[in-house]
Amino acid sequence: MIHVREGYQWGAWIITLAGKRRTFLSNGNGYPDLDGLYRPKIANPRNYRDYTNELVPGAFETLVRMLGDQLTGPYPESGQ
Image 1 (cartoon, rainbow, N blue to C red):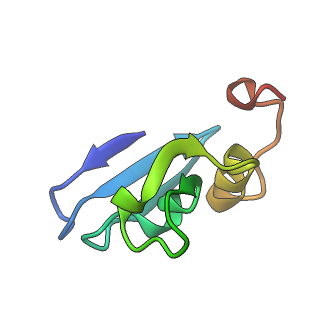
Image 2: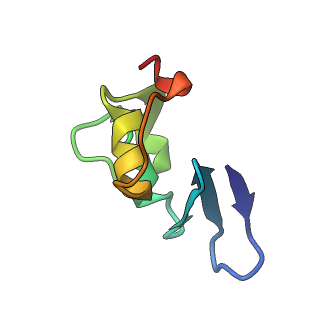
C-alpha cells in the first residue's frame, strides 16, 4: 500500500495484494472507497475526519472484493 500525489489532483492510495492492484482516488475530502471501511463517528460522514481508525466488521473481505474476486485465501492479515 503506497500513497502517491504525483499525477493525481488530491492523491491516491495504490493497494496491491496477491498480485492484484487497484488505485483508490481521493476526492479532496478523503478516499470514499476506503473511508467506508472504517467506523463512522457521525451518522452521515462527509470526509475522512468523520471516521474513526477502527475498521468495520468484514473490512478486509470487502477490500479483497474491491481488488478482485479472483483472490483466494487464507489471508493472514484477517486471521482467516
